[in-house]
Amino acid sequence: MRISTLWHFAIVLSVAAPAAAEEVAVEPKLNIELNTAQTTDTACRLSFLIQNDHPSDISKAAYEAVLFNADGGVQQLTLLDFGNLPAGRARVRQFEFAGMTCSDLSRILINGASTCEAGELGADVCATTLELTSRTEIGLLG
Image 1 (tube, rainbow, N blue to C red):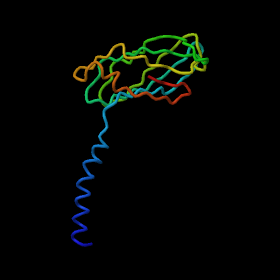
Image 2 (image 1 turned 180 degrees about the vertical axis):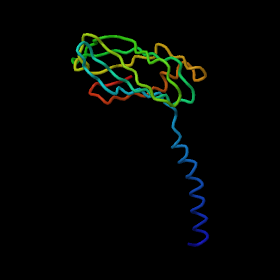
Image 3 (image 1 turned 90 degrees about the vertical axis):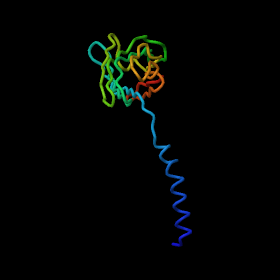
């Protein structure tokens, strides 16, 4: 390789490296996954996996949720209180909805955060960094 070719290659790498680093930088998220939906004798039990990727704890997070039936109609309006969410740690929370089977549910809408105590992160972090997914046939959207 000629020196001019090596010099050109070094310049390209020095320009491309910072751009690649910027693309890799990922903003912290609060991930909520509907992990399982199990019908018991008396209720639908929903298990959520929550991961707080922020650098600080969220001392309390609760969300208003709307449960939709299989026909798409509103089945129930409720609060999902996820409690304390430590930084960098996963938590599982379960909620039971009496008198319904999980096959009665088509989707769950997270209407917004009703409570978010997050200290230095700010009260809006529970809504602005929320990422929702579902491993079940029940959709989770916000």
